[in-house]
Image (tube, rainbow, N blue to C red; front, side):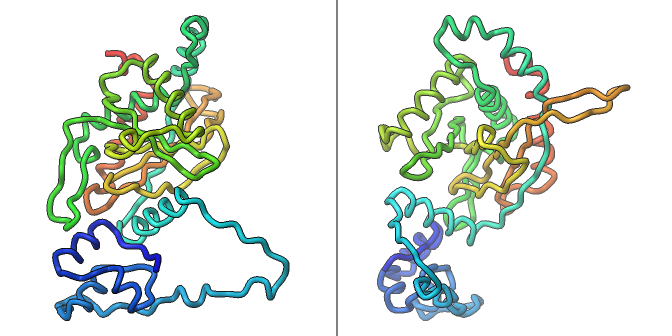
Length: 295
């Protein structure tokens, strides 16, 4: 039977000697939590008993209401759904929203257009976002961390690997840009393009997935003004980007300013609201003055 269990629940079940496959089969539950493990182990302690499985209410014969088609989910889509379902159920997530002034970056990209063409590289705004995020992850170490499965230990990382969420016909893939803090903008742009193309062609190797410090989910090319990305465990935060839009800003007079919406979702067990606000403020400063990224 297919079921969802977070990494921490799987670790806890192993400690208790509980077979999750058998537990899911016996209970018919599609989502397993620590209390289910405790109940099965005969040691509920202070945990509350497992609640009812409401998924049975979703078992509807839709054909009774009109014509339907059935489309099996791909393996990638099923794995993504399981992971995100567990993450959304187990992690107390909060999303902080802000904007970044893109005037300086757009001017710099325009001035480098001929050089980019000569190099055969498209210098994207996303490359600047990766560079800014890499700098922030070095400055705010709790964002470049993972929580141990038992929730007792914070693992601080002395590397900066950034996941780039890529929408493919086969499902969502997140190839990882390794050591992004050591790369220049040209190299970042080239690597992002290469990873995205190979992800679309399903030519990303297992060693190029996983181990990210944090992920960027970029919807800028599609539209939208804001969204709430789901934290991709074992990461503790994820940055969402949507389409840059020109808005009037008062600077002694009304000035048209291209603003990029930023959506930072974070694990509230590790990161507090004030931490998130400081992180995004610093991020916005770096985007507004990209010279800081080149120092």
